[in-house]
Image (cartoon, rainbow, N blue to C red; front, side):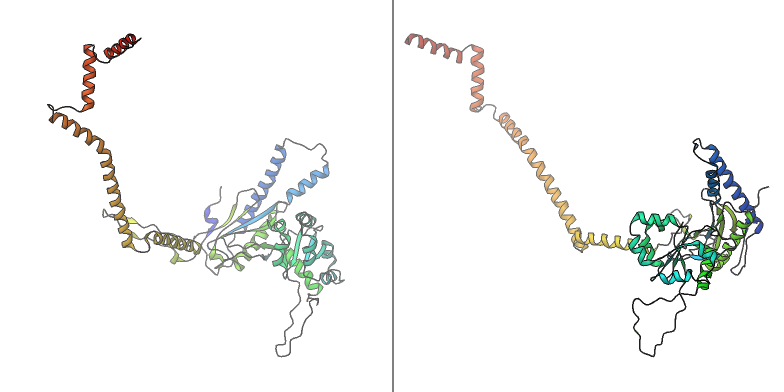
Length: 442
């Protein structure tokens, strides 16, 4: 039978200790691991291309790579966890570390001078097991000089599995290492505190000038080793101003019991340390793989943190027809939205001032003047179009009124020419007469 939603949802108070169900967490972990392994087998069987030169060792390496698939815990809160993004991630201790491989390659980035930290790592009191995994100790100045190009940064990125950095230089690393390290969170440097205790300053006495090349304080070897071990056995939380947070809690090659134990520890640490109002501010918790659906392990019964934030009945307003219509609640404007609206209003007011000169009466006068000019223009066009028509009408009326009077000279000549052509007289006879005179003269 499918699990009921009542097993996932719960109504909690702010001071609740833990609300996770171990059975539900274990069941979700088993289902997720089985799905990831079956999906990996299907993709391998469905691939048509096979490498003829592949050896059995390569198959083992591919199997190990599949076991290294990360598992993620997704936490959804009712309100934002923080207001601004933080460069330094939070640390939550988990019982089973995913950085416990014996061949793990660790790069330690320190403040200058770096030889002090190298001496600490090489100290006899420093644990041998941890020393064998620290492959390199590099200072800030050396990174600036030697790893300034993109290719050199990629080489450094590929040579090591984990990067630990002194918390005094962690804020300078994004500029020094660039997007090769900070594009995603796979190998982003993890801050550790390896500085010694600060000595109390004597405010009464005269200030002593300290040279620039003076040695910086550093913790003893045992304290540095404990700090590195604690960081490697913790889940890292990269906080951002949002309602969802993802935390890596294990690998696909682990047992379901180990995954469930890490989930319970990570959820408890997140709620107690980072979530506002603790369990009352938590909305949901899911687990997932890189390309799988999220499986729920805990869901809140209430979707809000305060009863005052919820309206039982929406305010109503009377319509023109007398009915009642619910008023839609408008979302609150953010600071950016308010500033943008204010800029738009100021721009529109400036435009109206430029057009109207800042006086509404002047704008009305301009409108009236424009209307008068339009009317005058249309009247002038009508007069110019009617002048030839008026002349023709006047001539026609003059002819009809003075029908017995003599017609103009042009009309008389035209009538005479027509009559001569009808009677056979006129220009033709004159031409014959001229010709006869010319013959007689000859």
